[in-house]
Image (cartoon, rainbow, N blue to C red; front, side, top):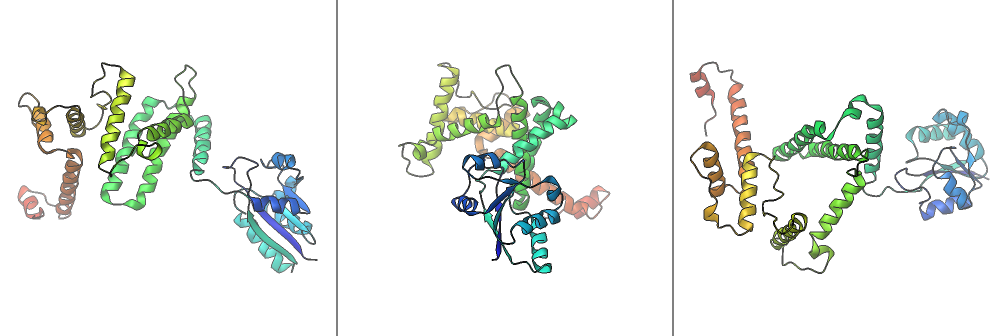
Length: 340
């Protein structure tokens, strides 16, 4: 009678005990279920009436030793090995090698016991951040204030990647931004003065906000198209500001003053117009450079920050093109400067 070895992959990102129907069928029909002694599924399998044989540590020192232990017990019966996520390439290679070299009559099959849900790898990031905070001297000493410059830097690098069209690199840059969110959340989770929060609190807050600001998706409100969505969004934000700041809430409450100056000017102007200020009153007093820039944004600056960045990027490209000619004098620079 030929034997059968089932490699049952599980995931540490899914709560123990949550297995596929196919996995439970294999577990209950097996002649022997084997698992490492520290596998998180073992106690839950026991609760369901599935007894696991613990594979001794010496049989798990190498993929080769584990493959030999499993194949020896699957020579004439069905054995299920409860593995971690995936079957493990090295174990699979050892099993294949032994089956061929020893001419074993054992069928080996990989069965997925659990699937990661979308976002499951975020749990890995939580675990990595916890370990860094506990074991890395640099990570352990960081505070919200010390991390703030990195958040700004990573956000700008992400914008730069988008503007340059390098969408392949965008994934990495978004990961850097995500790390900052996770880092700040981890730092906050350590506080015991009532101001602490966890990354789950952060996620819960943004989920509640998105649901609240999209009543046309999550409630019974209706919109005629994409152009109606921003108006609804701003109405809800205004109501939130009033609830947060009271009857004396300003339409400009919540505009972050730390953003780039052109972007700040545009944000203040847009918020003021939405609050009812006539556009002809969007002027700054005086004739200094700041006033002229503010008025320029008001006149034609809906996307002033982006437009200036685009122009600056074009200037950089023109400079580097001329720079390649190694000009030294003003006349050489003028000769090398790209013509429109």
